[in-house]
Image 1: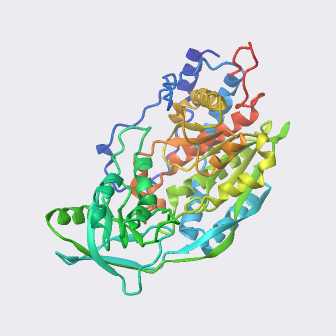
Image 2: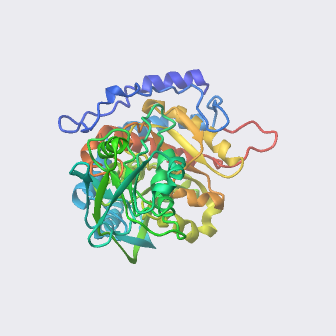
Image 3: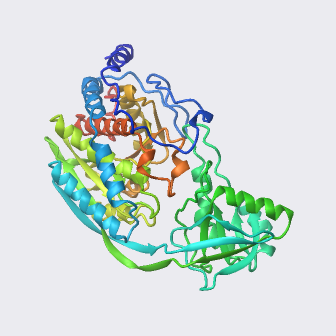
Length: 514
């Protein structure tokens, strides 16, 4: 099938694949006016696909055998869009179980729930033991004591140590970067450091700015402790805020003292910075988190077994844990129910691919990534049989494409071939494939030779709620979540059913098979 004919076929099929209307009460609540953001990302099935690095990837015409899946892709899309199973599962996970930090009873409940859900859908399922950290947040409060008296909105950073029992009262030194920290190191002895580092506003679909600011949160406490700081306040990693602090993990440097660290709301960070620009500021901080001994958790593993090459595996994955605030609806409850429902849709359609599709729900992504690292070690001998591992950890937003990480030439090959699969998924708005990052959990398999891919979404508003009390079910649109299921189900099926491995090289001198 040539590109023109394929494009026309997909355009005609759009009406048949129209998302269902779920009626009043199912419009996702949101905390920001998205009309202030760039316009919606339009489907561009035949446009060059951006690649980072190395310039755009322009997929060649979709040829056999890939074009043979056009009708099947449309059938999967239509079925997934008419299905509410993912939203129903997400409702159970968020409203009934809620936040699911490693070591918590809620995470244990979520793992049992996932096993029971797979069994109810007719899939063989088992768990694989993982030892995980057990950090408990407890209480935290902070206030400005001079030049004004005012309470601050804070939440402890994941893994932080406690303050002394009576708390810490100290002057505040505001820094804008690590370079700024170095320039003010003489002022840091006995001080509380405020990292007033804003997350850039989301300006395009390829760069959120999170990767630029999150290292400040992770490394900031130890870098400040090096110069005698007694605590850290971290401006929440979000561009838009309603005075809601956003948590996240920190990484203590064993060579430096461990000091308490909290996230402060954007509004309070900016207030402190304004006050400090006029004169001395003092803050009191009290918090009592605890790090307890490691406890047993588990990855959940279920399979749709392949009909011809069952020992070859396509993984679709998400992480079942979340932070202990909010409900973990977007991060990563949406990913969990997307991969669960993807295989349920395929089973409903009677589609059994050549290869096995393995669903992995990883534990402990948020504050240790031990689920991902343990899976890679446990399945080390089996990794050569892993054809591709696709992770969904980008929220319940409209699917846009794939981000690929693999070793050597496989990275460019897989990215190109996934760009061609995106042509088949144009009714969903899928239009891009790039190289760079496949996912935190599946990334542990890259050194074992496994190609990885992240399902990318239009997540311009993701960091509005990320790691905060606002990450709740009402922020999820059921119709968009169904589109994520469609994208994952169709991609997993096509990759698992192709005659040749998607990560394999072309035969010398042969025409490209994709």
